[in-house]
Length: 323
Figure 1: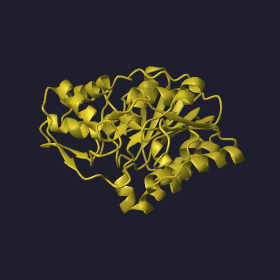
Figure 2: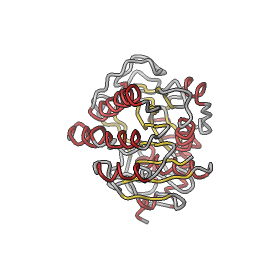
Figure 3: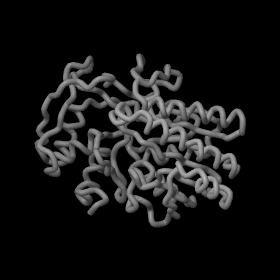
Figure 4: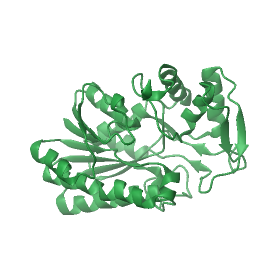
C-alpha cells in the first residue's frame, strides 16, 4: 500500500514509518518538524516538510498523488500545555486536521487511521477500560482528540471515509533506530533514564497514597513497535470504529523505577512530591477488541523489555537526535 503519514517525524510516527517500510509499504511522511525531528524520518521514506494548517498545500498533495491510506499522528500532546493554551490545541489538533480530512475525501483515500488517546476517557470508573466506557475528558488535549474522533464519524457518515481511531495508553520503549526525544520531556520512563544518564539528580514520584498496592499510580506501558503493528493492521480494519491498545498490565511508578534500576545498574534516587491534579490512580486498557478484530499481537508485554529497549537507545543517543 501507499501510505501518507502525517506526523511521521515524531516519536510514535517514526517507529510506525519504519515498521510500514519493513513490511513493504511505500511511505510519504508529512511533518512540520515543530515537534518532530528530521533525523527521525526513515531514509527510505519520502519526506514533505509542511504543516496541516496550510490547506492549499495539503489539498494539492492529494490532488496530485494517490494514497491507499492515511495515518494521522500530527498533534500536540502535552496535557499541562493544553491547560495553559487550549486554543492552540483545538486549532492544531482539530481545525488544522480538517484539512487532512478534506484531503482524504478529495484523494478518495480508502482508509484513515487516527492516533487517538486514552485521555478521551478522563477519569474512568472501570479498569481495565473498554471501548464502551464513557468518554469524559478532563483537559483540552483529551477533548481535542475526542472531537477529532467525532469529526471522523461524520466524514464517514457523509463522505464514506473509512476510519479507525486507536486509543492507547503510555507509549514507551524504542526501536534500535528510533527513540524518544521530547522537549520538554514529560514521560516517566525517559525521565527516569535521564537520572541514570546523569542529566537529572532524581526522579519525582507524584503521590504515594493512591489506592494501589504500593500507593503510586498504575499505568499500562505499550511498546512503540506494538503500536506500529496496530496502526498497520488498522489500515485493513474490518469496519470503521475505535480500539483500545495496551498490554492489560498495570505497572506502578515505583515498579518502573525499580525495573530501571535493575536494567541500568544505577541507584536512581526518587523523591516523593505532591499528587498532580487529575492523575487517575489506575489506567489499564482492555485490548480484547483490537486482538479479535485487527489480529493485533503485541510482542512486548514484559515491561523489562520495554525499559531495556529505551535504555539501549538512550545510551547511543544521550542527547536524542541532536547528537
